[in-house]
Each structure stands twice: as structure tokens, then as C-alpha cells.
Length: 491
Image 1 (cartoon, helix red, strand yellow):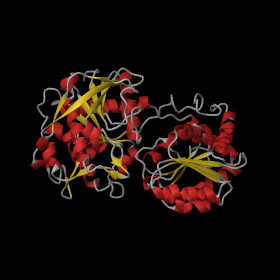
Image 2 (spheres, helix red, strand yellow):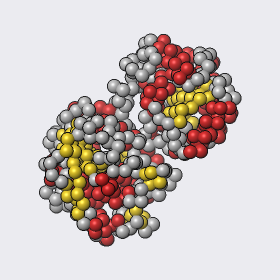
Image 3 (tube, helix red, strand yellow):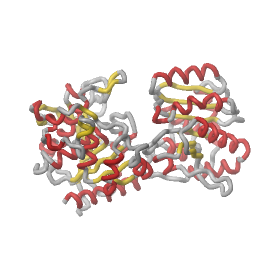
């Protein structure tokens, strides 16, 4: 297989242009490392109203892209071209005011747009039509989650003999199985691939269209963002109703753990910190702890452990587990800071906790990148009590910042954190199995005990974690092997 393979990455979001979750990190960072490995890639995104062409120096390409939308007839899109920082790979933006000129990406006021299926079928078809404007002829199209999953069945049906994409293989990455792209069954008339594909093996589920299910069935190869999550989603507990489909397709299912951008997440160079530090000189971490306490209005104490959490405040992240355990946890001699937003009840609940315990607990409702960096550096421990976690990145950041994570042993958390062994002083963090307040409390208690009574062991945990690396170079090499496997299989 030619080393200069062409990879089209189709995604609904990507850093630095637009981000709501980890999907954006993968889609935005991967092209840089693929280029280093000799791949020729391009990235395609919707041009949401939130993406300002002037801010990102986007150039509008001449002409209009025609997109066939089945029973809806032809729709038309403008195309912009920009640059991915750090590499020569172009990024193309599909502009359609009716579909993407909105205040949100997928929802507004907590409610998903009712035409989301139609919006992202349009985007999927636009990705397949784009080569007629750019001349880019991909060997593999890399799909991400339900938003672009429709590309897989389209490649195998309506675009099977297309001169530009008809020979392309597909790789579908599953970032979070909770979101599947449900739509009324009349979306089949928009897909335009024939009702024969509305069946229990392909796109039909409970008499609706399930775009992710169709993508899983039709994709040449599948992967998730950790080996642990790849195993878990084949079980009823984690499969979100698709576990049987995934077991049937497990011959093509792989796990590739996300990497970390160590150019941004590095305590030795991080400009957002009050002081820099390294595994050989941790003195700056004490300065960061005092700074974090000051930023959050907590007493500047160095004689208590400080716990941090940066998260979406949703059930998936175990926020309800933390809420049920918080009173017992705060009865321990510790402090805690929280940064995040999500479900409204959590905003009020943790705000009330902060008001009731001003010397021990503080929170910032919202997301603030500077605070996130300060928490990673200034905290003594980092909490991630997730019910499930396809990959997770904060635990990897925490390891690099010498902040042992406390995680539930699930998905990417289980893959990337090694439980502390008191006897051998090995491990990088603390893990618990059961998603219960009792298990979380006990594990926080274990960390507190270690902080007060086993400083030599804690120092070992910090050193072990700071020397671990989860590089994008390694992840990109695995994606490269998967692309070649898909292309060979597709031929």
C-alpha cells in the first residue's frame, strides 16, 4: 500500500475551531501526526455560525457545492478552506445557513434540533461530494460518531461507483455510544439509498432510523477510543442497546487510546500556571496549590490535601455519585474545588455546598481553560467518578501534572491509570470498581490516608505518573495501521 495514502476526516467538531467534547480533540489533532507519518489528509467540518471565517482566516472557494438530498431535491452549500495549526493539511468547512447557521451545534436550550438527522445526512453527503470541488480522492474516509456515520452506508450504496469516493474504505470511531442519531423513518427518503436498507441489521431500530447503527454495520473498520471501552460496549450494561450489533461486528472492532497534546499540557512550560515545575523539581507545585486556593477563595493551607474536579456535570461523569457522597467526604480533613457545567440541578446543588462549606469547598459553574489548568497543577488529587468513560483525558493530564487521579475503573480510565500498590509503591492513582457513593468515599479516604500517613508512597505515585506518556504519535501509528487494514479490506 502506498505510504502517501489519502485520508478524509469527516467530523462534526474539531479543535481549535469548535469543541463540545473529546471528539474535537481527536479530529483536530490527528491530521498533524498523520502528516508526520507520511499520510495526506484533509479535515471536513460544518461551518457553524459560531465559526467566524475572519477569526480563522478562512477562504471561500469559488463555485457552489451541489448536494443531492433525496426527496428534498438538491441543496447547495458554500465551501471555505482553512488551515490546521501545525501542519499543511487543509480543513474544509461546509456552509449551509439553514442547517448550520444556528446558535448551537446539536441543540438549543437543552433540546436537540428536531432535524438533526437531516442536517447531518446533508453534511455526510457534502463530504462525499466535496472532491468534485477540491479534487481530493480519498483512500479512506474516517468517520466520527453518529454525525458522519451515514457516510458508511452511502459509500456502500448510492456512492458505490462514484469516480472520486467509490473505492474509498471507511473507518468509524465511536467516541460515545450514548448518542446515536435517531430520526423518524422518513429520513430514508432523504438518504436516498432505498427502503431495502431499513431493516434490523442496518438502519432500522424500533421503527426509526438509527444512523450510528447503520454506520456500525456498513463501516469497513470500527474503533473506539480505548481498549476497555471496546470490550465494555459489547455488553448490555454499556452497549446502549447496540451491544448485540457490536458483538456481531467485533471482528472489525478495535480500541485506540487517545493521546495527549503535551505541547499544551506540560507543567514545565504551561503559561497558565503561577509557577512551572517538573518531576525533578516539584517546588512549583506548592506555589500552584496556593494560587488555586486563592483563585477559589479557599484558605491557603498546605497542611490539608486539595482535591480537584473538572468535568461536565452530568450523570455519565458520576456527578450524582459525588453529590451523594459529598457530605461524608467534606467531613474529612481536606479541601475540594470543582469546575464544570451541565445539568441545572448540579449547578444549584454544588453552589449550595460551597455556601455551606466556604472553607472546604468551592466551585466555578462553567468552563474556563485557565482554571482547568490551575486545577490540574494545584490540586493534590483529581476526581473522576465516571459511570462510563470511553477514553477520558483529564486523568492523563493529571498524571503529567503530578496529581494522582481517583477514578472509577471503567473504559479509558481503567486503561490509563494503574492502581496504587502499597507494598511495592507502584501505580499511578487510585481506582474503585462500583459506581456507588460508598466506593467513592472509601477511595477518597484511601487517598487522604496516603497523603497524611504515606508520603513516601505518595511521592512514588507522583513520580510514576509524571513519567508516563500517552502520545499522539503512538495513537496515530495505530490509526495508520487501521487505515491500511481498511483500505486492503475494502479492495
